[in-house]
Amino acid sequence: MNVSNRHFQRRSRLLHPLVQLLVAALICVALPLAVQLASLPPGWHVPEARNAALASLAALVGGFWLQRSVSDLPGTRESSGILPGFLASFGLAFTAILLFRIDYSRALLVVGFVLSVVWFFLVYAVTQRKAQLVLGVVEGGRVELFDKMDGVEVVKLSDAALPPGVDAVAADFRFDHSDAWEARLADFTLAGVPVYHSKDLYESLTGRTDLEHLSENNFGALGPMNTLLSFKQLIDQLVAIPALIVSAPLFLLTALAIKLDSPGPVLFCQRRMGYRGREFTVFKFRTMRSDDRQTPREAANGRSIESFITLENDRRITRLGRFLRRTRIDELPQAINILLGQMSWIGPRPEASQLSEWYEAEIPFYRYRHVVRPGITGWAQVNQGHVAEIDDIRTKLQYDFYYIRNFSLWLDILIIVKTAKTVFTGFGHK
Image (cartoon, rainbow, N blue to C red; front, side, top):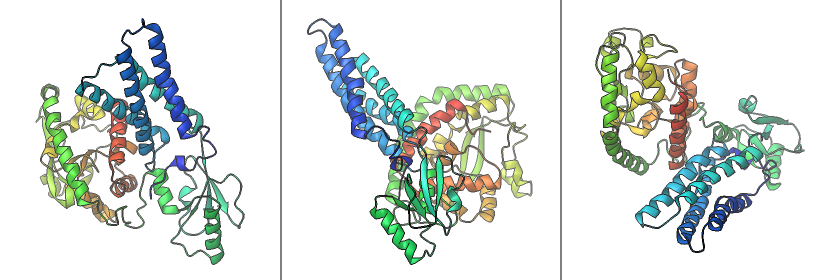
């Protein structure tokens, strides 16, 4: 079950979605078109302006649908889908214009895109930014999950009356509630108040899957459908080919810079645990001094497992290495792993084989993360960043399990957008 914050924020929504779209059409399409036509001589470039306005209107509707689809993902805010949604829709509109050689006004199309993004961010800022979910919680079972959650005001339910202002009710359906409470939950639903299983609601609001039990995913099995995995692998490999060609100059410049910065090989190669528990060799640009980096053979001979973990301000990282890690350029050679079918662009990050064995001994169900191909970026990376402590690893695993359980195109789109943000901000690098 996928639910998002905006399903609960009924009291904070000032504009109906249809009203938002109609006002956006007036501000982002009709107004720029009127301004341009008023500034042109009669008949001058009118077809180009009309075509651009129609393309902007189609992109506006498409972007509105896309941004709401991305925002429906659990653990996301309504603003999460605005930029990716309109980038995709206006990009498709522009591509169609070029393919069919349609005359258009570039200024109108650009203005339509900018105003669309600005308008919906303003709508979010006014109606949703400070909205808070008022959650009625039925005692019994695991319902303490919501007590310290940001953006959630918990109201303990102790009698039949539902306090005013409650947006939704959470109850642990695995707990044996009394017959009276079962009847009250049914009454809440009949009164139009959503009632959710606490575990599902927790996942929906946080984007993390609780590790208490190894739950089934949305398709009714422990792993995503093989057809989806195969289709994703095909797309990954098709994208990897032009990506390697286009980034070849950057590869050469980075390799030269690494050679000039410190002695040692250009690439760092390490055995890591991959799809379905099969080991493979991952390729990265070297970011540490080569004499400080432990090899898998040395680990097998008894050296400390901690040497596989990169710490905050790790002394082993070179000057250039810090830049490569912050910008994620060090990950680019993994496009080769994608082309070989060993990795995906998006998925749980592959761990060193020795670390993976260590985590499996400490954390139940850890090997479940190998049910999909590991990725260059992933849901845990964009939400949590690099971690080392065992408690943080548990949280990271919750994010990984959530990704597997909610495997979808929309989630991948959201991860791509969040990855671009982390590249600019340097979030989560070590």
